[in-house]
Length: 199
Image (cartoon, rainbow, N blue to C red):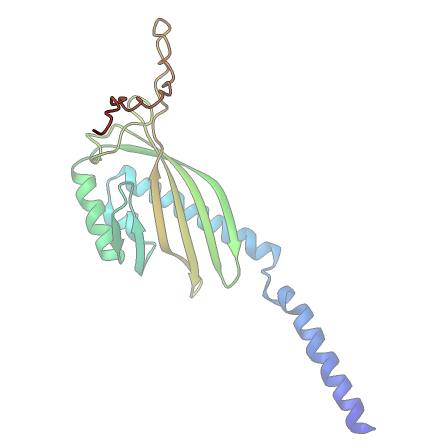
């Protein structure tokens, strides 16, 4: 009887711990508010670093082994490589440029992981990478996504991807008639050969 009671109590305790485990992992509301403020501050400081063309400051919140895909699809591995690339563009194409960044979404995942989506609007650039066009005259807009992990109380970017927003297609001119739809043509029949009687 004692063994049966012990078994039932153990099962009940395990079930209760499993049922409450999501609550134990969930961050308190106050901590979540602080984390979101820290992430928004990270974005704000990175924007200020861009506007100073300071590659070291812009890259400081990437993890040592972070990955970053830029607007032309090039993959950069590690903070050092990310910083080196941005030092180059800050001294060439984006020298003197200005960036305005809007945080669109902050999403917290399990295990101290967060995703931050931002919209960037860049002006006053010298040029753009091959294949990239202004979204509107003089303005390049991009959509950036960061995945961040909180390590030792600090949020670090572990992965990032930046995608340029393509310009809207030019409207058709009022006097230009629409292109006719292609017509289907019947296959040309094979020529009929004369019938020759055998002798």
